Length: 359
Length: 271
Image (cartoon, rainbow over all chains, first blue to last red; front, side):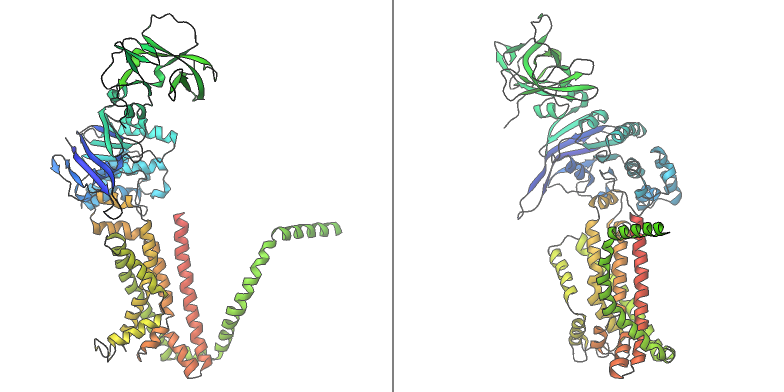
């Protein structure tokens, strides 16, 4: 394992001002060549975890290992980790080439090697023509590339990316996402830890996703697995915005609002049905031929948002107070009117059960 | 013709109504003219007959050289001491850093001659150190000016350093730069505008410093402001004093212009 965190806990503040726990008992290991995304809302401890790996914050407890060596007490300068932060933090008084050369010069590499490596890095991120520019003369996306080139110039075995796309606008973000995927193929042996609050970035880039909440790790699993069968209600809704419906068990059958979900086996301690918005189909309230493996919920439409390629329709289920169901209706389907009675059709293969939130 | 003239008048009056606000410039200009410019012009006129005598005198040339020497040495001293203290206060976490920063601000409120006065108790012939002779040397003046003017360098530096993004220092460290390299290659270049501002302000103030030099009363340390005082008040050589005053003003304004150009250019480039 290239990166290993064991029981890492970070407290801020002191006895007088009260302590804030930013990270609690965090375990993580990232293999060479693997991309792990730390995904969570703000304040979930994901950035703190990254800072602990980089050495910018000192853990109150726990150990951090890089390539098998304990680096918990080493300063950042002696860890050899590439770091890219949200605002890029390029050195404003240095030209692009000198920014990229910073780490190489700090390591006192010979001049020829510095200029060769800087050239390679700028070429890799497509910024060769900008070597003589100052950071303030570059766009956000270009600064981002320089920051990545600067981090990779020191040939780190670990690259940490802290919300690298958060400061860019939507179109540029999509482009940069593609570039990061391409970059991944350029450096196949590096372990990457990618901190983000954006699930689409995590799904697009990560091999495994670690979902975090309230300074703790909630779930960690390969991205596809986490999406298909979320182990917890929080992961289900944070990753992919799943609908969560309370279920009851009656004579060995799982029921939602009185309707049987055929073929779904009840499991101990799992009292929420999880289904993605795009898996639900809306039908007019007519008697149906019950040949399909589906659950049918009767309700009405309370809101609809057009989103171009699809519409998100919000429905209330009859008999379930305070539970809204979000349904993605593709553009080629008719969107029911506000207040209309509808039947929500839940295909069983898209349903899974998750435990209810504790507390 | 009449119509054209009328038209022209209309245009002018409408413009004047629109731009009527510029009239507000007049009262402050008038105050400045009466209180500042007029007396200075009087000084300049008074000085005319004495230029040849004064500028040729060794006394004047020595004072000019001494003034610049003391001002430059003091400024360099302030920059070194001020940078050191600002770095320690900003980046070395120690309890009481805020108290120290507050003390620095308090120093700005004290009169400069107080430092000179207190020096006589430490360095004077009957002082604690019994360092006879030191007080009458120009170095005493430089030391006093460094003591008093260092806060003028520290204030803008502390502000600039608190604005440095922590992420930049973090990233520099992660790239393998030790504290010394981070200081030299990241912190100092980025706070250079503050260094230039503080340094030039100090240079300007030390060029014109009078209280400290007067209170230390060193015989070998005659600066231009001292010379103005001696000639004008003690020797009643009013035209002579005026000449030196004009030189002093030219020196200050010239330095101020350079300062404005340096800082203004920098500000424009940053935008």
